[in-house]
Structures are given as structure tokens and as C-alpha cells.
Length: 100
Image 1 (tube, one colour):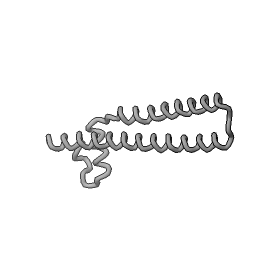
Image 2 (cartoon, helix red, strand yellow):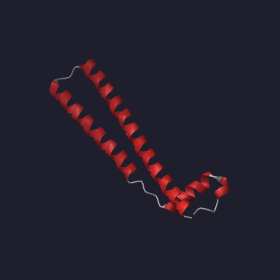
Image 3 (cartoon, helix red, strand yellow):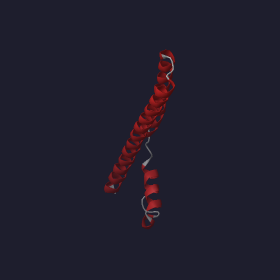
Image 4 (cartoon, rainbow, N blue to C red):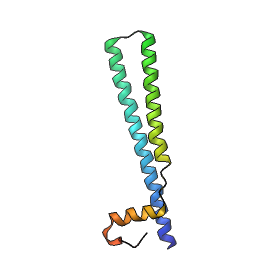
């Protein structure tokens, strides 16, 4: 029984790590995409320096808030072992009613 509990805990840690990795990847994609788009718009329009600084600051703030939301929710992911066991039972047909 201890081995099963240990495996469920390991699976929960793995799922949390995968959520964090996905959050970091999406954050990097968003940062690079927004920076490229903002750079292209800035190159094409050539707004005054003050307006550019306001837009870049607002963009950076929005990205930080979005990244924080994604990463904090992934960091707080902590399902109970019963929830993990039920999820495993649903995904593996032969384990129905055995783990939880």
C-alpha cells in the first residue's frame, strides 16, 4: 500500500511540474510574440518616444500579470491523492475502483 501512495505522490509532483513547464513555455511564447509585434508596430508607426515608453510599459505589465496568473495557478496545483487515484482509474480501464 505504501508503494501505491508513493507512486501517487510522485505522479502528483510530475503533473505539477508539467503544469509549471507548460506555464513557463506559454509565458515565453507570449513575451516573444508581443515583443516582436510591438517592435514591428513601433517600426512601422514611429510614435513619439513618450507614447512608446507608455505602450511598452503597459505591455510589459500585462505580460507580467498574465504570467503570474498562469504560474501561480500551476504552483498551487495540489490535488488530493484520492483525486489523483480517481484520475488514474479513469485513464486506465483495468484499475476501476481499485486505487481510490
